[in-house]
Length: 277
Ligand SMILES: Cc1cc2nc3c(=O)[nH]c(=O)nc-3n(C[C@H](O)[C@H](O)[C@H](O)COP(=O)(O)OP(=O)(O)OC[C@H]3O[C@@H](n4cnc5c(N)ncnc54)[C@H](O)[C@@H]3O)c2cc1C
Picture 1 (tube, rainbow, N blue to C red):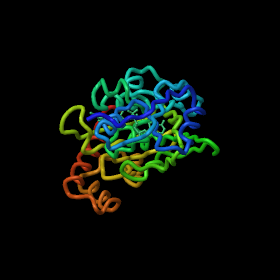
Picture 2 (tube, rainbow, N blue to C red; picture 1 turned 30 degrees about the vertical axis):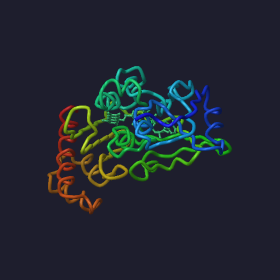
Picture 3 (cartoon, rainbow, N blue to C red; picture 1 turned 90 degrees about the vertical axis):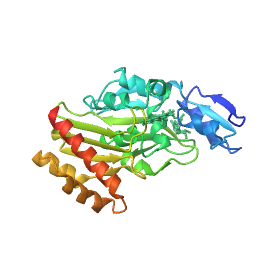
Picture 4 (cartoon, helix red, strand yellow; picture 1 turned 90 degrees about the horizontal axis):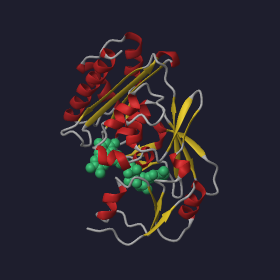
């Protein structure tokens, strides 16, 4: 199938993109890498009157850094992170995560911001950015630019706090110290497919930070603070029974198969992280 006809606007800067989005004449959508929106257009699941292309918008391609964090423009591509063309605040975790997204053709076009805004529960960046405690910078016409922690941004499957007219401009990732331990484990049926279970663990003793995040559930990523704290304190790999009990507590509706997949992925994530320490 082919998309319904739409007008395509290439935006030169954030203000012009936000200006077009704020016009109240029909349905306007942003397009970045087009790797999620493209198929939806072709299947006519999305039928916008107008697309605002931000893939080349310089302000969304910019990467800056301070002592505390790296700010990735929302249109930073997966492949650029994978190839080490961007600074790495995550001690290797971000390039590793990027390299496991789909296959190279998707990674050449798909963007960090597009992935977060699409908010697929099985998307890698949704889990990884929650584990890395990223902050999202969002702008629109007539409102102050707002900051939101990733952990609050995604509200459910394909649902975020983005309001009509808002654009995600950049993603701030804190800089982690070289004492950081991280693990990232995905269970996929085939290489390049979306995962059935994802677990990310990031622990930085210098920040007294430890967070375990589970992705590829039915909605927003699940954060397991208690287990993460215990793990950072003891360094003991939790048993499957302990993990399953913790999962039941936080997500009582999880079916047995998913509960088992998450427990296995979590154990492998932690074992991998501690082995690489
Ligand atoms: C075959 C296939 C396999 C895939 N496998 C994986 C996988 O294993 N893991 C994974 O994580 N992903 C996977 N993906 C998704 C891929 O990573 C996409 O690149 C990503 O989800 C969307 O990024 P995009 O830049 O292409 O966004 P687009 O498709 O351009 O946009 C997606 C949505 O976000 C909105 N949007 C985009 N940018 C902004 C912005 N700056 N501000 C506000 N809204 C914005 C758009 O309006 C749209 O609603 C796969 C995709 C395909 C087609």
